[in-house]
Length: 268
Ligand SMILES: C[S@@+](CC[C@H](N)C(=O)[O-])C[C@H]1O[C@@H](n2cnc3c(N)ncnc32)[C@H](O)[C@@H]1O
Image (tube, rainbow, N blue to C red):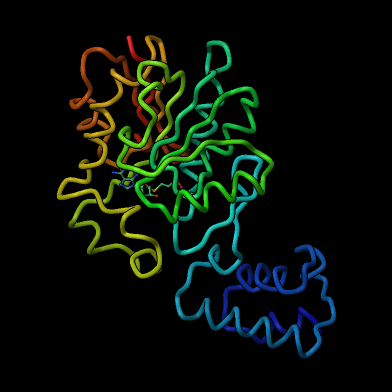
């Protein structure tokens, strides 16, 4: 039996079968597609992964990691699976017009993807990542180590997690806070609602409850001229602009599908 035979007989979409066979065999996609021999042990391992997928578990949790921003980020049920929109936020934050930032903060870090991706781009920066979930912070620390990056992690609610001496000194702040409204939470696909942490998603009746606290802290924590790059929910950008104090400037930026998804600005 070969990987080709298995894919022809399977119940999963072809690209998912390919990815699970890559995980089980350790082979490249090209090798799996061309067909490599599968012994009984590998066939059993593959059908175990298939069963998990058919039960609705996200493919990325089964694979155990995702490529993100030059890094390989481990993901499991402790954290949200980083999305392509967030990788684009990282790209935006990599193009600062000023000199390289010395102090970078990623609030709501989850798996640590943004913080670790930025540490890779700005190797001399002090990179600090926080999350209200201790589980997430532990995984972020492990991910940093596995990717050879140095970050400092803290547990706590938004800016409260940060050491006091960082106040007014942040050169670059990134955040992808939870932004799903109570109504939207009820309409999430099962694959998200049943598997990803609700703490990473739910943000009150209007989806802005965490963002409010985040925006309120910007003037006190950024240095004058310090930058922020924040992901917001689709349809939230205009409401978010209304929350901003007049001590910061801000533009709305679009994601790759043309939706207003990011607040990019500076403390004045
Ligand atoms: C949308 S996820 C983003 C995770 C990661 N930054 C990413 O983009 O993949 C939001 C994260 O915020 C964390 N979180 C929720 N409320 C928070 C709060 N009040 N303070 C700090 N972190 C919070 C959650 O635990 C979750 O890890």
